[in-house]
Length: 157
Length: 157
Image (cartoon, rainbow over the protein chains, first blue to last red):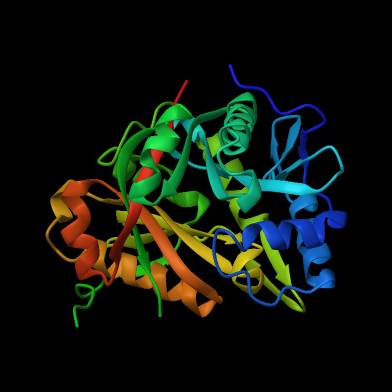
């Protein structure tokens, strides 16, 4: 069972993580122009968006970061929770935007972050957790306990 | 350009659609025990969950139904809108739970519903709309203007 390197930790993303998160996400895709105030507004939205089931309230968005012993963001990813009708009004977790800093790849941070987000979603009652990935990353996600179950398709203008 | 049959319409799902939606979704998967009051509570949650960008407010969940000339639900599907950091704090639409009543299949209702939901998501500012499907449905979604872009993976307890 892998563990985080000494001094590393996983925690919920905070507004102060602006620079580290934006830098880390650039490994994954085009981040574009995201100002500090836009980031702070988005983090507030994520923090304020909750889901109420009976007496329970839980966050819909669960963005997380891995930080090293100096507090630097070295990985990020999120899982958000969708309320469906099917499966007895079931919940589904969607893992999104997993990125690991280039100098930290191959260190199992990605696997540990995925496992953390997956457990969080199941603990909150999700009957399944899904993610979409490139064909070349299927083996990695299989190591994380996922299995191939379908095809992702997209529509862009 | 296909059109709905005379008397058919597409509209947002309402609490009164309980029986028709539950029956229609059974074509797709296990719906399980969903009581009328659970359904009504879920529809209220979907209606109340909004996303604020600047001065604009828009619904996160956009469940829709196709009804025939008698008002019977003959198809259902939804698109929900996720707020991301990447792509300049971009929005992504997730099309989910598309189901067409068995006696209405082959009538283009699915295609018309997908086009409606996809346009809705783009009109609300989504830079892309994604969905996951079985391999056997790839050709159908290609006819709807989607293209294969990745692999869906899932994790279940």
